Length: 331
Ligand SMILES: Cc1ncc(COP(=O)(O)O)c(C=O)c1O
Image (tube, rainbow, N blue to C red; front, side, top):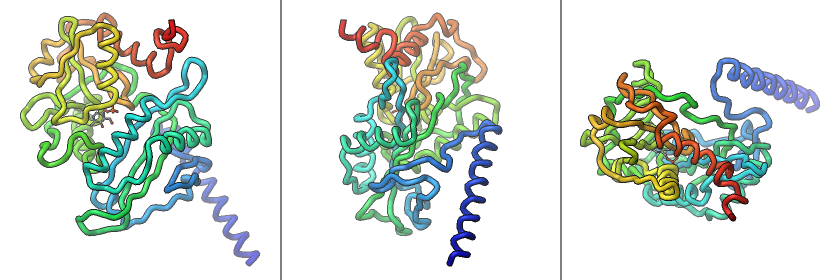
């Protein structure tokens, strides 16, 4: 027995060393690192080590993409506190995504927000990405389930699409027809479409894809919404074929606050040529401008656009800095 314990320990230590080497290796290669040996996740009511978490290999989500998730950001604010940006909106959207897919959802938003703050604390993270995922039990049948499971993961995060202006190409993959899926649900399986589009355009040398809807109008990025600037006004595609993002709604709030006119309307890709600027926005991408689309550059330099003002205001809003500092807001 003693011998067995020693052997297990040896195995554990060897595994731990291998995991640490792997993390180190991933950092050297510039790849994303999601967890290390001490990372804690929240799994079905418990805080446990990520390295010890188990998932059923017969899980319907793994096989068919039948699950829903969220992408949320927390920020270290100007006064040093940790703030999850629009936490309520994100967890409410996850509840709605589960409803649209017919997945049982027994959790309460307030409880999940508290759990997430605790998870950030346990992982000593402030500037982080938060990934809750509602997944299905073991089920190989194409049918509904009587229960769902929940995991919440957190990891350090830099803006998803980087901080340099983007070179965009228009993908040959379009967004799924709204009669095939619920575009407003953040469902796991939808992201196969996103991966195909992004990979296609990256293989052609672009930084990211723009996806059209089934009618040939501009829809969105594989993981972000799009705004176009023309003569002092912003335009964005209406809901219907897109995931109408929480960041997109925040940009509209900012436009109200900054007196910038904004309109939802179907946008033909030809209009990109006449735009002064274009940007993507999303929780992970934040606000990031485009350098070009299909090699065509825009008429205004980015720093002279109202889009760049929006970018600055967004950063201030999420970190409660600049014009959004708590004292400044009280004045
Ligand atoms: C397809 C898609 N569109 C838009 C967005 C932007 O949504 P949000 O601002 O809520 O992050 C995302 C973000 O994940 C997305 O995946």
